[in-house]
Length: 346
Image (cartoon, rainbow, N blue to C red):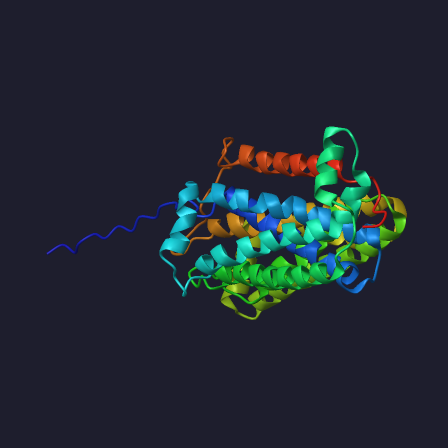
């Protein structure tokens, strides 16, 4: 009697998280990191007003754009309502449907309160000036309201940071994500990128020096998290072994990520290189999330080999990434039109 022949067939699995998800985590991370940098000045009156305003504008640009990227990732905007019609308290993603609107709404209110004097200073007879006049009113600061809304928004920011990290870290089927190092890496790169984008939005040398220290701190912390993941792999931790496998499969991408994280540390002491250091921190935050999401989904849940993924040209891929960048530019231009060049009384 002949023994039966068993054949095992492997197959490539399409990624469940597409580039729109990368864009959402990238944009909301920058917004959170930049917003946290505004609190010392607007809530406690410390630090540079120019640095705080640049960080606030960076937080607004990315914070307003982030939910749009998230809705695009859902493919059908009405799916967002399912989180409210059928609440699921055991899902971090469902909790995010409450945390994210609270943060973005608080951020817009916080930004308006913080920038009222600046809007009033920009008031004029042209269309942007008339809009600025409406937003600024009499230009009188409202410090107590600003502090109350700032505290509310800070709580919302921490909750968004918690849920965005937790909704990935709880996925036990993906060892690369199933680690407490993941939220730490997201937070470190978010702070570096938030400060980096703010650096690009100000020309004040003192503000750039202050923001540069945040870029360096966040970049150094992210490097330590990356190294800790590799060491965990050598120690036999499943998440670390997955990171080692990804590095082995994508050595050039991993090397580029390390260089992007290290470059701001080398450039930050040079006065003229501050914008470049900030830009590299922003790119590093995006590259971190791309490797985490798109690179991580190349690791098979079962079987051998790696799943291939080619970035599509359309709205699900390259055009989506470029569209997010275009939306950020549009928001930045709108804010630039209704704000004076310098902080002034803001």
